[in-house]
Length: 106
Image (cartoon, rainbow, N blue to C red):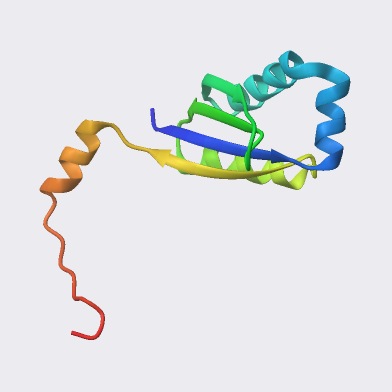
């Protein structure tokens, strides 16, 4: 199953929800959401910095990943960014593909 890194930054309303319910409740809500589209949360961390949360999740497809991101961002409690993660074997497979490419301006 494809693996994704989801980065979330809480809005003011989202932070108020975290303060009210706590981190464990938020993790459980995220796990339920990801499971509802056929996925699984591997890890979830709260953090300092630009992003408030980092989630590593297995999701069945890019469409499932997009559904999670769209739903989360539309809620108004957080904004998300999602990164598709590749295994070393997937990079090996990509490196073997023959790609036709022309440099811009050439």
